[in-house]
Length: 335
Image 1: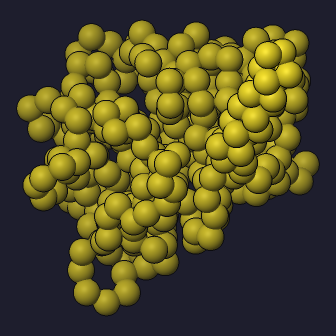
Image 2: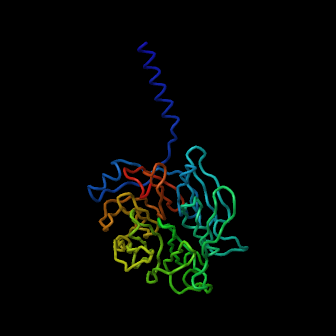
Image 3: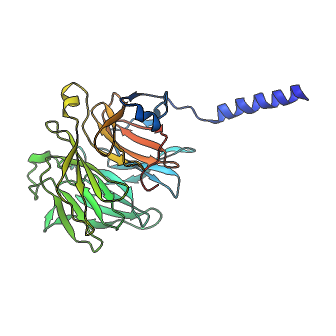
């Protein structure tokens, strides 16, 4: 009986090991502060889930379906990844629906699932913010103009708990970028779409606003700037009406960039304790709300964005031509 039990246990272990899919790994975790050990366990590996993309961006976890969506901006496509079935195309012409070649980055960029369960996209080529039900139905334009002028190329977006959206509008999706003759707005702004559809320009003095996210209480808006001369992360107070106040510097990554680490502050997310998980020079930077560097996830590839997924403790990352994930000891804000 004992031998039979041991054989049963052995084959159970072997079956379980083979049933669990093994993914290749890349990068490494760098501990800059002892407090980082409370967020990621020692020897945690970064798994590569899929590869072969031109420029992966805008990851978002769909809780209802248990899968990840993300953009391939040059390919004008949104992909779907799930544990059981792997990779598939979720949406063609994700950000540009016109004819001919628009630019080298025509597709969707930042994606979120909003409070109504819709896929909300920042569309480069169509220069708008759109919302689309995940099951049946076409896209609805939430905003494509400010004061009658077309946006440059909406890049990333987040939703406040009051139902308004905040998004950034740098020039990356335009054919000639900041020198494109089709530009109608001088500033590369940060905008708000109120619940009634009113669009306001909340921040006008950033040179390359990119990723953005709210603190867990919704009172602070963080904005990453992808300017190689001023690669920074800023914080802004947000009042009860949704108005954004005067900003202050949270972290300056310019010295890291000048020291030879590739990459800029781009997409970012916040965990339940308010820590920032931001792409930046070398990969991912993990900061306290006041800007202390706790640790890094060094990817050795340009890292664009990230999103919480699974049970809220897994960080999914878009890394140039890859989509990766890493298990953490925390959870995303509001999970």
